[in-house]
Length: 87
Image (cartoon, rainbow, N blue to C red; front, side, top):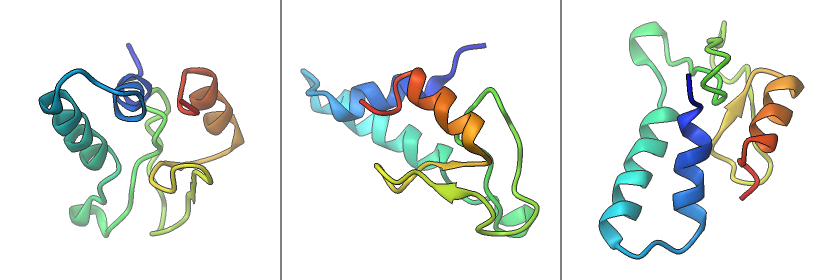
């Protein structure tokens, strides 16, 4: 299984030849970080390979760089950064 989040970020933070690609990359990122209102407003870890859900809203910490991605722990943050989140 491929971590789509890091691929999406590479298109977002690097100049893209077309505006359409940037638009759809933004849509994917917004949907990946969206709350699940049916579960009480909780989010899933931004590391797609983890899949852990918050047990209560705002349990996970935001990425200090982008302030959008939320991770369940240091292991997921370091894995995401090694896969390209920092770009």
